[in-house]
Image (tube, rainbow, N blue to C red; front, top):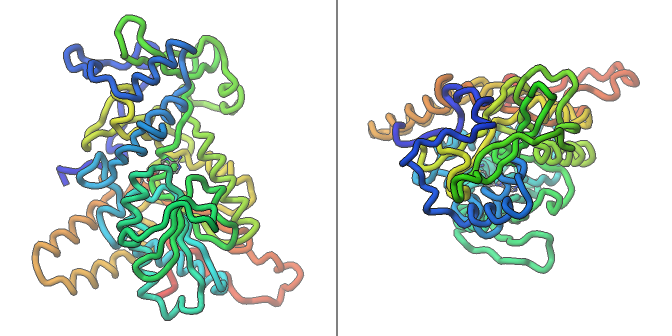
Length: 436
Ligand code: SAH
């Protein structure tokens, strides 16, 4: 465990406000600015020409710049990368999520087809574990037409996903679809890759976003005596190729649009891109049915400065060597709920340990423990359970949040047909799992 770090914050990072105006505290001597990264050189040119940029623009360049961004080039998920995620810790995590989709599919009357749509699939481990469950339940799914649709901007990670899920047998730029790549899973399910959720075909779909929204660009705002100001990234005029945070001299369109009049916090982070994507998912689910499951670390509209960097499993100065470190911010679930705008019902956020407990993780672990004979596997199983469930590790800081069609939670025709008595099955994970 000591070798890997999670992106969820164990303890609050130091309060931010003071850092913003004065630049990030760098110890002299520990500076790596001499090995300026390609992203830094590109940004420095831009900043000199046009002035400071928003944190969102900075984050977008650092993470997904087509040539040099962190995810585009490196995308370090996993033990040998920069951070570790739940699906990389235990197969049980993905298996229980697979069961969640099956349970929703049954609860909505076993539609004849569904798409599994994953946003930001990383190494493809989670999709692989889910597809294994679908394969194990193939007798149940035999009459259902299942396809997998992955939304991934990183060429490097999509290659890793392809080799994990299809053994590398893929076709690039297929003529007959909007996907940039397609292949067939080990169990025979068609898989398609896209850069944008809007390219994914419409239809009854199960959406999944695990540690995806935290990687999207945020805007940061600071309350000052003169009103709200946006935090910007600029080049330090005194130190070559060194970046610093500054405050916008006046309000910006973003301060006008994103700060609520009733806001009480002094520092606020907003991720408009997350809002747009949630709106798209909500529209699709409202129209075609299905469900979305979002799992991430985050808060319900209470936290302030959560922007941080990770490199080699260590916290990393967010302004240093952009493109070489993962940058991330806590997901604001209250914002996601607001952006679903009543188009769908929402459930959660609830803590990962409660969700997994409701999904039957204890029973699944018991079976795996009984079936494993050697002590090393036993130890590994117990260790991964502890990582996922311990409130001090991932159990409390990760949350599950779902979008569901309204009719999934309430009979629309109750008024017209009060005699309809069939009870609505509870949504697994947020309540008890009935499918056994
Ligand atoms: N879900 C995986 C990986 C999380 S890392 C896991 O839990 O292990 C974030 C993932 O989102 C990476 O696959 C990254 O390449 C992808 N990503 C980041 N920004 C994206 C964007 N704007 N559109 C699509 N994918 C993106």
